[in-house]
Length: 365
Image (cartoon, rainbow, N blue to C red; front, side, top):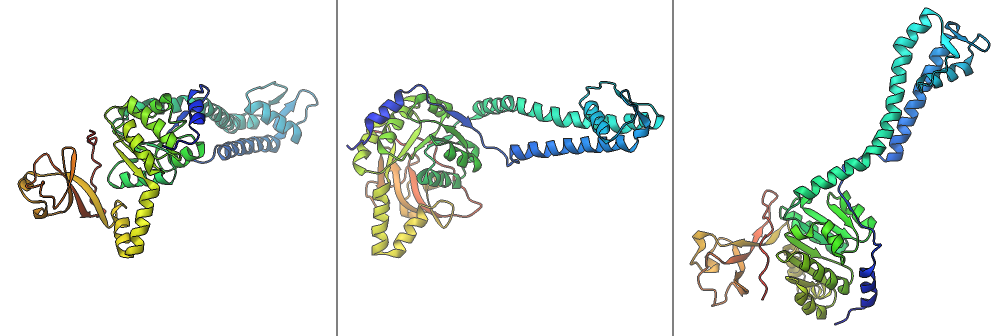
């Protein structure tokens, strides 16, 4: 068993200052700086309009200092008026100026205050709104899929399960990289920034209520620690793990994984098959790409199929799941199909057809 850097991982798991947070997917909105810039520009435009309105009717105003109102005085009056400071040193004295203040300056003052106060309130209420969204998300999240690692393997796994009908709202990504979580939320998935070997990070992903857990970390030793932690928090979830080295697969099984995929070996076997037969390699690639062409689907046996041979069903049956055993379609031990059996079949994928992922955990010896 090769576990490079195990001591470093253990030290990292003992740290108590690890920062982690939950990020929910957002609708595409304008950049905050651009929003503030637009509002500031609008406020300045309101100030300019008000100043020029006052200057255009400067004869209707009086200044306590020198009696006349010039352009600078007009800007000064507009500033103190829109900000509701109102020193009273410059006042409208003519009827026209007073009517202008009632029907023009006052609405501009209200607009100015709405722009400034609205921006401030939005900044102050952003945290409260985010907390409300987070609490609502937690209260409705059930039987979801947790994906640890949003690299190439993690993204491909999510695309595959979503192609079978899983909604994006039912996927939670956990990754220590903030950029990876930003990419996940941009795709519509909820994300948790943090080290998945820590139970408090997995708890933020509501892993104890998850139906499926996909572990696609960059290191095998990290995958072992995450699997142990996830299995401790959720005894009933289906846990599937990807590892680089095949010799680490037995340890992952002992740690609680239901299925272990050796990425390097799997890629190597596909390469070897493609060398022997490029067409066969293309078919295998098609089978493992859900949602297009041919798909491998697990489904229960229906009543009309009970007692039949796997070859007598309408679908192309590859294997039969009976209890703890996976039997080939031509295995004599299969005999007639039973109602408790499950079938691995090859079907033609169509845009209107979605088969929901199997919710039942795989049996473990």
